[in-house]
Amino acid sequence: MLEDRTTAASEASWPAAYPQGYAVVDVETTGLARDDRIVSAAVYRLDALGEVEDHWYTMVNPERDPGPVWIHGLTSDMLEGAPLFPDIAEEFAARLDGRVLVAHNAVFDWSMIAREYARAEREAPVRQRLCTIALSKELGLPLANHKLESLAAHFGVVQQRAHHALDDARVLAEAFRPSLRAAARDGVRLPLLECRPLTEWSDRAVPRIGRQSGGGSGGGYPSGSWRPSRKRPACPYPNPGRYVPDKPLKQGMRIAFSGDTSVERELLEDRAVEAGLHVATSLSRLTSLLVTNDPDSGTSKVVKARQFGTPVVDEAAFGQLLRDVEPASEA
Image 1 (tube, helix red, strand yellow):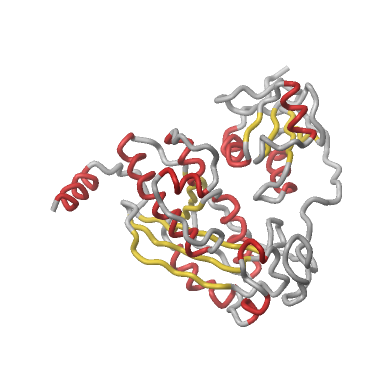
Image 2 (cartoon, helix red, strand yellow):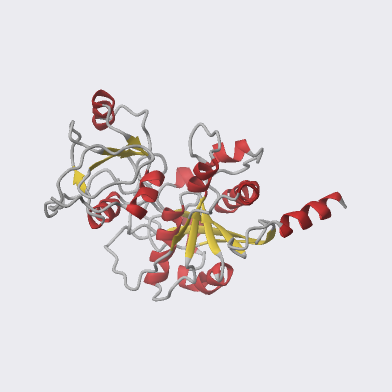
């Protein structure tokens, strides 16, 4: 009875502007690049208050090497008989339809889903996404880092099979519910972002499924550390100086990247350039901001950032900053 009264009170005070339903999503993939594929997907559907309605899971045949088997545990033999993405696209879409997509580092999950639908010449019915990393920052949660395991531990959620899509989605759903209610209680605006579907796609040749050789760091998993250089046009705006924490980015700022990113580095750089930022290949005293998901690493850029006092943010925070870049000052 007490639980019924609590729920009724929550419904009565619930912000009217909040979404009416959520799809908590996790996808496991063959890698992190734009040509990588989904190998498994899970969705927990939640109602407006964050209560679980149902859940769904499927493996997906990526029609190529499965990538880091040592992470997701899905081998070529396991995936060979799994459905292709076009075979599950309708069911997947039905579970996303009319809901806000919720994921941990949502830009990655949404990017992978949008690409799969574009390959299938379809469009995912998602118009907004919510990143639980961004929400935890809005709530000021005292987390040591922004890993899913840290968010889960904060709310006492026990993870059983890390990097299994269904269990990761369950853990995130259970951690999202108290986050959502804390946001509603404190009148926090949810950090919703627009989801823009892809309308066309072309793939590069990649190893077909069944051609990986063993596990570990060898095998058919392509390295994401090498990429051909791209000559970009010069930034048309002067460098306004260093980024100031809690202030917006400004056109002309010099942005450097270091280490692995969930979104392919080239795509992150394209977004930065489109926003009027200068993408720097090295770090100097003139660099405005360093973007890295591992600020404790010993890469040369991180070391120089410490020496020069260059501000550092992670990929999720940078994605938020890209939403509102100030125009350059007129000369």
